[in-house]
Image (cartoon, rainbow, N blue to C red; front, side, top):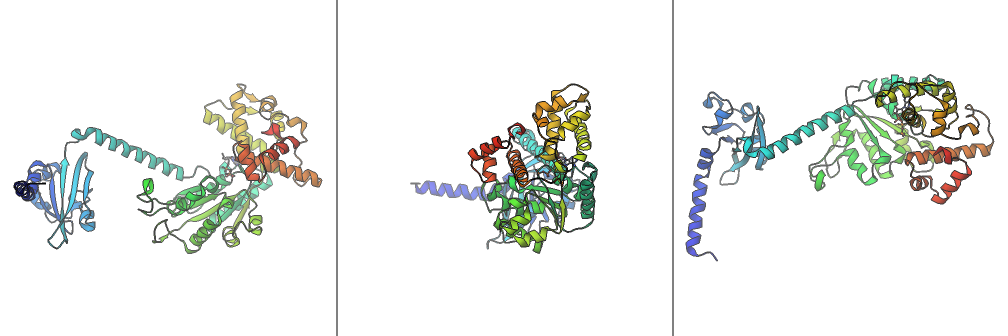
Length: 473
Ligand SMILES: Nc1ncnc2c1ncn2[C@@H]1O[C@H](COP(=O)(O)OP(=O)(O)OP(=O)(O)O)[C@@H](O)[C@H]1O
């Protein structure tokens, strides 16, 4: 229990601190500043003008604080009434550690605020300041990389191919670039859907604004809504505490590419439809609507019309997205394009690997044309990269690819599109394609592929052996 003596002494000390604190700060601190409730400078201690390179201290009285200290946060303190207990403030080449507090009158009304430079010599705080500066540099670097990533890499020139099917897709894509309505790109995995989406964006009037891609199949369902619409400050604890912009906001003025739209859950489909109709989004945990001006390009490797017919995809969203539709043919249906795509990919892969360029022997190309290419152009790029790494010769030969894709000579050459086949052949081909595509999409994980296909792992293995596709995996 404090004695009466102690209580009196404590009160005396408290009173003295209250009376002299500001004076002590003023003497000890290299900077003390007082502003009124409009954030105009009311007073500064003697030392501060020297640090701020102010020749005539009297001349700054009455000026808005930012006119004198551009990075000052005093206005926020007097507007919100919230103190900023510790902050690093930059001024020219110097960094000060500062504390800012609001000042209230007897009735509790804010009448102004004061800011104190707690440390003016960053050397005293070298470890903290250098960590802060490193973090800031890392942040600037990450922002720059993000901006680069949001710029498109591809234009129509990168979509290689001269087959009638390819030329027709490119032609439609060019037309889509001139329009502003949504685009739906349908095609198997690796056929170049994202490449086309980027090319459309780069040739559109939105080219100067961001291109933001979201792969719906790659993001857990529980995170998709916040990924799309953002999070309001305070809605979550932890890393999202401060709030975060969603992909819609990040794509403001530009294009949002929604890959694997067929994988979207019904509840998110409803929210996406609302966002497209109203041109407004509501971040998670907020009741504020944000206007968005975003062009949607959606892509799917599923038969979306069938998903609609079977009730898995909303018809109204489908019609909204299906305004301009591009059907990208699989590689096996435009084998005429294989040599020119392979040449172009071999060059770019060699450049990326720092390898000398190689040619592709005609027999090698003929051998590659026998493959079914369930992973399409992406798979072709991967096979060429492996071929390049395995051989030092100037020209890649059929034998190089026999090692990577064994057993193709035993298989009949791919029939030209439209070649009549028996129903059994068609069924087997469809199963073969679905299985290879599912395994490619699951990056070789058979359990995951079986789940996607809706069959057990055992029956997946049975089918792989019955269809003779083990060599393709
Ligand atoms: N016609 C083409 N010419 C040159 N490169 C192509 C072509 N089509 C696709 N590619 C290349 O193949 C790779 C896969 O393309 P992309 O990612 O656009 O396919 P996707 O259809 O979006 O695949 P997924 O559905 O799996 O996301 C990329 O490296 C792309 O540059």
